Image 1 (tube, rainbow, N blue to C red):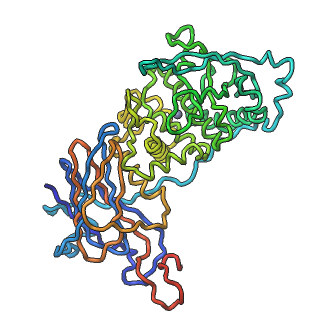
Image 2: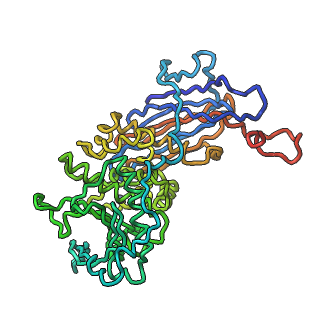
Image 3: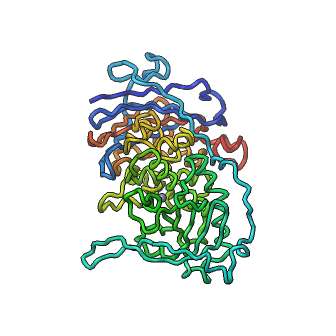
Length: 499
Ligand SMILES: [Zn+2]
């Protein structure tokens, strides 16, 4: 057993003897509590006005189930160590300092500005140049579209189905073809034009700037989009499938062994029934990111990797940081926020793994890679895309930091950046709590404000194989939750809001 006592001493700015309200910027500090063979323990002394929470993470493999238990209880009589230790040291039971609080710097807030946008033609009416009349036949093109055929015995296989499409918008860098089945009535010329211009003017500049250009494998000078409602017939997760790309389209060619009846072709498939949904820029940036990652790996002579959590995470991060659109992400973020302990970060498709498209897992990987790119900068994107190792090792290779450190930083950042910074969670009652962490997942548990000079014990237990992490987080700079003297009639809110 290894017990660690954490002494929390007043900071220089501690307003303990001053007015009951303070309005200083909040600072967040973290203290790593060592976990030995699945057990971690520490003592905390109340230190108003700081308030506390504990972040518990698991580095268990895949989306496994790791049972963890947290005991949180007041201790009756425990001598306060203030008199015998220097400030901010964290003594262990044997008296030697183990660690110090360190300041947590939140990542730069907000959205990255997209790279300089091109000055495309914007509202130009391509319908005139493409021709609705006799020349339409010239702009027809056939595509082979994947269909999933389920056999009577429940197995299935991919087959191809011919789709004839009409070119309905053409920019120098983007062409939009619409399935003839959808071109009458379902998809308008204006919608096709919007897709072409948003791809050429928003999504492609972001992806060019951050990951490098998508190879023009078919030599037509532009990235193609096929808009078809046939996307609806593909196997769907709980989230409707709005768009997809296939690496096999890019790879196909006389010199490659890959089989694609289309190829080589640089193309995004877009669901014709979902054009009215919000977040078109984000969707286009997402799919273009996948294509750029495929291209960078091919150029580097690397195999395409079957690691959704990395490639989807990168695509979601570019989608959000590059366009600021959240239409494709909000449901996934919400699912993650509702149950972060059940949202495994590291999830791959694998045979029969139902987690790989679950909204909360997508939310986790979207948030993790957004944090990572904010911390490491967009130059890390090509490095992650072309890592020669796989999985966690790929991230360590690309960032120069152990995955365990990246994971801990992210889980702490979640506690300070993705919620209302003014809000102090309700303190949790002492007692025992248990959770099941899904593989690489984490949760935050609010201890709230602790009364001065009361001592509490925190004890975490779980399976050693879960690779548990425990981090104590101290928030300083909020007002005390104590009533304001009733000198100002009717004002009973806390000090912070009165200043
Ligand atoms: Zn994707």
